[in-house]
Amino acid sequence: MSADTPVWYALQVFHHKENALRQHLEGKGVRCFLPMRYAEHTDTEGRTRRILVPAIHNLLFVQCGQGEEPALAETLQASPYASRVYTKTDGCWCDIGSAEMAELRAASDPDFQGTLFVEAGFAATRRGTPVCVVRGPLKGLKGKLVRYRKRSYVVLIAASIGILVHVPKWYCHPLKADTGIPHQQEKKPETSHAEQKHPCKQPGAPQ
Image (cartoon, rainbow, N blue to C red; front, side, top):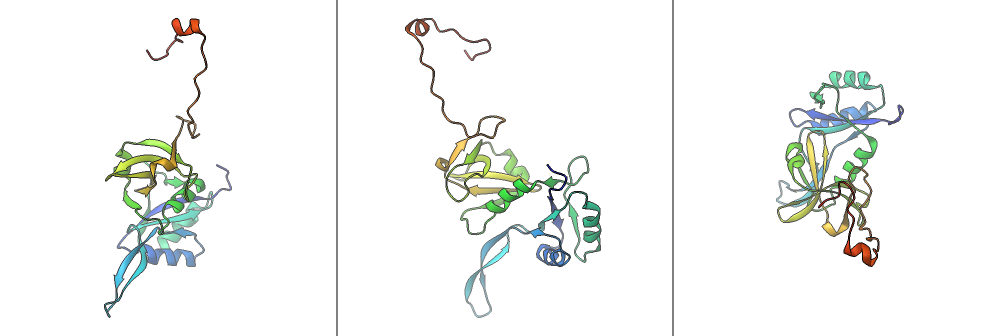
């Protein structure tokens, strides 16, 4: 990652003030992202309409330039809304790269139907296959394809949350291990008649 590339940090916001903190920080020039979802709201006259609400309470993402963490910490400390930055096991702030954040923002689009927001621990323990989405509006998205409640989801994890995005499994291609490249079934090389009668196994090949 370049020294000039900004990173993102996840904040735990207290007392359900994530939207108020977002507005406060944006007023200070801090770029923020608050995952939203649609919910039905009934007004005092009994009319129901869809409105955008935070997808998960007490969570807010903020962008920070490399080396500007002390200034961000001061801004957060001076804010009237209490929060803390999620940290790693070594105590350092848990940073999220720009590319990873772009995928998370795309997956959090409130117009997508069936997206689930869960605890990161729950998402991490779901067994699945690393895939790349090759069709549809989320083409290029990489994650873990899992089966949950009889539906297929691509799982993304950032800080304390897991995002399960409903994607048909035929929109996904499995990834080769450790490469991130979509796996394509390779044709087996043709063998001679003699080789077919007496195949030669390479050392370490599966029996």
